[in-house]
Image (cartoon, rainbow, N blue to C red; front, side):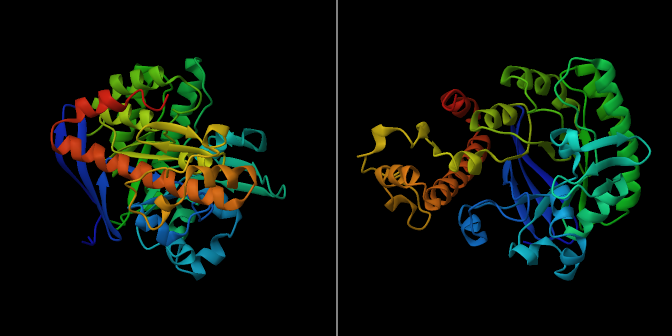
Length: 371
């Protein structure tokens, strides 16, 4: 069912784990949800119709990379990214804030201006202000838009983290003004503060004053341990507004997701399924399988005998091992598709267990499966 306006519906909880629905003009998203990453308008190695078959309900694109290629002019010509890449369901776009950290050698931060990049492609100067980031995301025609933020590298220096909070809050206010009152889309604020509870709460309180449609936990999955990440989520997630979706950016492994759902997170994205697929690593209900391993050379069994996705279960581990060793691109495509399918089945089971009030036992069974 399509909705004219963005909204979030909290259906039930099992302790802190939440079952809900995000309603958008392009479709409903069941939460907790996993968003495959399509940084440059493609989830690497996977056709859009195959993504639909995995029950992916929303994907993620990236403002910085799409600004460079194909650029706003072409995106506007197609009416946005949906028609350009043949994906009709919702799209969330990162603001470019993560690239401020990951491409730090190519940029500098100016509190008043924004992020000033030297393009990693051709060296051209790119100014990504909070306003420009929103403009690009509107050209992409994103359904969920993120504010531009400063995402610092992992640090214990409170002065650095506080500076990032101040910059991010200033940019968040400007992003909200530029976004306007479009009820068909959503604008999410991004909480910073590293691994410090007091700084996270300070950041969050400032964002709540601005009033966003959803809130993301940023500045995690940047090198901290899983224990550290779970600890800060445990200490701070309950301060997030209950009636709005909660998004943990850039996370992660199935175990990461499981632990974060336990703390009340609703939304996830990560390149893990496709990046692992390109290296021969598959996620299964029995754990991770490194298909490069010679023990699979004569293994006639499929990755998942219960897989209902096309012909995926017709390919043996032996065949996949052969493709990997032969450096055939089909290996990356098949394993990446399998991994996305597994992640979506994993999310489906998480939702079922929250609904049935059995999440605690599901958590215990699988939390250490993917170490």
